[in-house]
Length: 280
Image 1 (cartoon, rainbow, N blue to C red):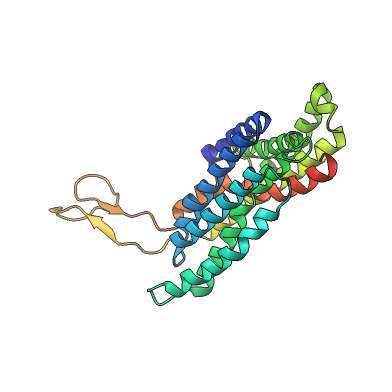
Image 2 (tube, rainbow, N blue to C red):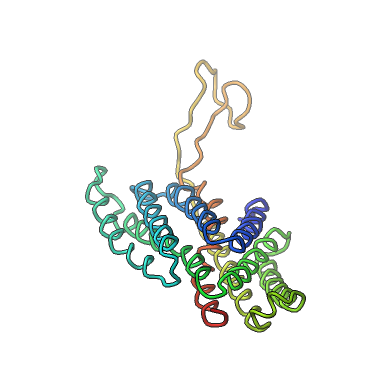
């Protein structure tokens, strides 16, 4: 499901988050809150599962709660992320028990809620990495990798080729940045910079592939159509008087927000681990 606008949005958002990280943790926290909002309210809430909106609300509370906790304490550990997952699991079960639709698709709905909560707290790892020693460097390098893959995703070539190009751009860009700027080269060895950027880009490519797989498997459900009052006969083209106005299938709109937010979510854990090992 190629989308040039979504791919360019990923590249632009990566640049904004990198600038925010260089400016301070508060601005980075605001940018990460936006990523969590896009994922939960844009993606999870539109999923084709029971109580999807409630699941999105719980995931949003978990993500913003862990983010606020980490920002308030200014710590570099992941304790807030782990601490909020327990209560959100209980809340997810309670929501399923309170459903009044016969709890159809209970397993799918509960799995969606729990998975959404886990994914919603992962972006907090970016802020935790930023709070570590010299954390702005690995954050910037990892975001460079995500942005490079997002930029390459807009190329009119096959999926595998453009993602390979994106990962290569991430590695080359990180190496060039270290070799051409003294302030980065003094803080991060060239090999470490390439490793952080490359693996962050690789996880971003995996996220794009996952969204493409979901889009390929998505089967629109039959939807009722609204016909203009007084129309003689509905037209199949959807234009002119008396045309059918078909509603967008629930779940179809979820892929664009997921395409924008999932690369940052998927890259967050590997950026944190490699950043702490090679830089922090």
